[in-house]
Length: 380
Image 1 (tube, one colour):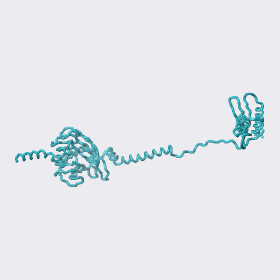
Image 2 (cartoon, one colour; image 1 turned 180 degrees about the vertical axis):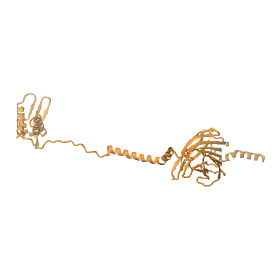
Image 3 (spheres, helix red, strand yellow; image 1 turned 135 degrees about the vertical axis):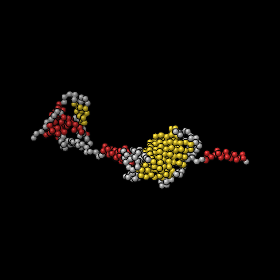
Image 4 (cartoon, helix red, strand yellow; image 1 turned 180 degrees about the horizontal axis):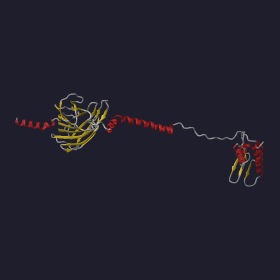
């Protein structure tokens, strides 16, 4: 009987750690408010890892966004300055997801010893987070956050303000996000506000502090702070408008280059020979005489074009062959002087070759051609 009881007690002792619930024992926060509107947060978080949710380290989830009176949403600007575990530097990385800014603390290759208390210290800067109002300024901060999956036994916060601060009101809130419960109490000592919870916080419950004080202690937002808020609010819209303008401008330029209707084409004169006037006649009328042999050559070429002559030429000889008699149909009309030139040049022969020696018949035809054209188109 005794032996069985001892075995049962030993088994219970070994299995108790496995059933122990992970929790945050102490969550102590120190906030140093600066005159430029920034504040430095130092957190000390004591936990006991049981290998359940806490295995290699912890996740500290900070709020990612905040809103103003106009319901505009802005992003918190964090600068993590230091992270330690039990007084020694601890690896960490930060990332944003949904509505939270996460600090993942711990070495992924090292498991925490089970059942041992671990104290994490996190120090970070929050930029331009004093809230400005007409009659007061305000420090509003979720001390513990509302994302923890295990209870918080004790939580406290000490907010230190610059000298000369004049407090107006201190409000404390506990419970789930949006809760107005106040299971906490606060004390004001000179330029410091100290607050602590009076009951443990459950899962997904947080502890929030609001301290209002007279204006003038904190400097107005700098130009850089104002620009940061402006670009968070409007930069996306400006970039969208700029992108739209860029696309429209690109298509306009493309249309200017290749899409616009072509301008009126340049006007070139087109010349045609006068109707009823042969090449030789046009030559003689224009020059009022013969200029070289161009008129005679043009007349021969015109007879060839109209089908009266076939002209074959090599380097030293030119052979003319009469074709009008062989024509199957009527040929175009020619001037009387052209018909006279055709008859005198060819005679009764069907072909004539010139070039090797003097041809009196060719010379006579050329002379009569000039005389006839001069008589027909010369001065009256």
